[in-house]
Image 1 (cartoon, rainbow, N blue to C red):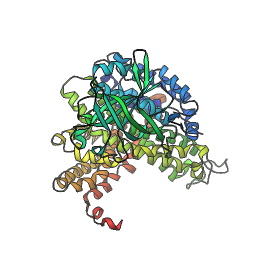
Image 2: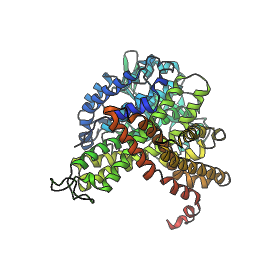
Image 3: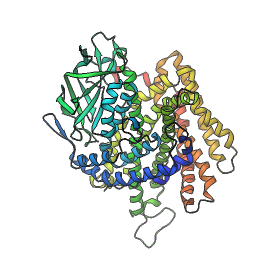
Image 4: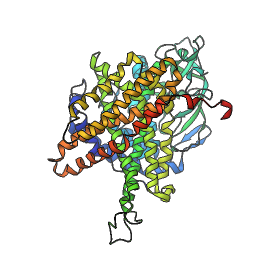
Length: 595
């Protein structure tokens, strides 16, 4: 049985105490935002999502989607839940009011997204992709396309997709073959096929809006010759929708997880579409959607991990097995609950530290998104853009790795009972696994970090992290309450700087050296970023605990979890530095034929 309670106290801590909510109210369009308003949004979201989406998670996984002659039907209850979801406005929180959105900050929208992923990730894929399509179209679409399609995407009456992958090209989109031919009326006709397209066919809405990468006849080769097109399932009319367009679902995939989320193969047969952005500049437009989805994928993974942690912690308090190594803790019972055992504590504390650290780091990035979206051209906006660019591959890859690791640890807490379907834990493991693959595999994210983000603008992006981290160390290394934690964090930051210098030097002479170090470097950077969040949270908790009253236990637990992360998890950075410095030699030495 799956259970979940939204971690509202920790969400409020991250929003208001760790990251300054008052700063959001100084941004254009957010002047009326108050902490009380954001708290109310989270509270109402928690009630709706837990009551409406959580009960469909296990049943949707068991039933899956049905495919019959081009028609996809979602599991029982999904249509009704989707209608309630959009009617309540949960899919339009941060969308522009011009198109029917509520104009709330990304900061609160990302926390609501976490709740959705904790309760029912498969369901969340449908509105989640629509928001990504909204962003791409809003950024690069013509005014006519935006006025026609964005209100429908925002109110949820239509959904959106991103159509990139083909059978011969995944990461290497320069190999795609889908063709687009210009028409006299300014539209285009598309022919080709796409695979692994999430939410590309379903019964939740009347229309589906596909954003499709394709080539014009005179396009240059490679990624420089890719354009982006909007291709609706049904052609819109003044009264709503008209004729069926030339796009069909030819099959759905049978997957390891996310069984209630349709993953489709699409065929475009002389389908009518309209260009989004400029000819041969489709990747620029599509990256708006892809980067949004990459941040969301990170949230997906630790959202699952949060639900898995809550279930595992509850089980560990109740399951009686063996006695404590230091003597019986509950002599009145036939055995002690397994939470007394150090290894069970190790697993639960690891998951807890990862989840709370990821939430803190994710909201820091969401704050930067709000500044990036709402400020005009200025230094603060450029800094926000730099920070989001730097952290996007880290959030996607690190959060998805830790989310999957955490789901596994939570299952392990159950022992054999975790492997049984009825307890709901194995679904978390299966559902979390895809987050390390889609929207660019984690290996691709690592290459992006090392190959693009590190050298960009002579290392300018790095300043947005190293600067604040170094300033915090300087101010708090001798702090009477957290000084030891800060000094340990300083060692990890120094190791990250060494790794950065090493990769920069080695890659200048041999690009494969950067590639060989990339996965370890991304994980290392991510752990140091989590460490920065934890020392900051420890300082806030230490200062607040004494006068916190009923909240004292919350702050005490926060300090204890910070200590666990810094002492037990952050030291991984040392071994990662050693692996990076070992170079590519042993990795690349074995001949291809020997594999």
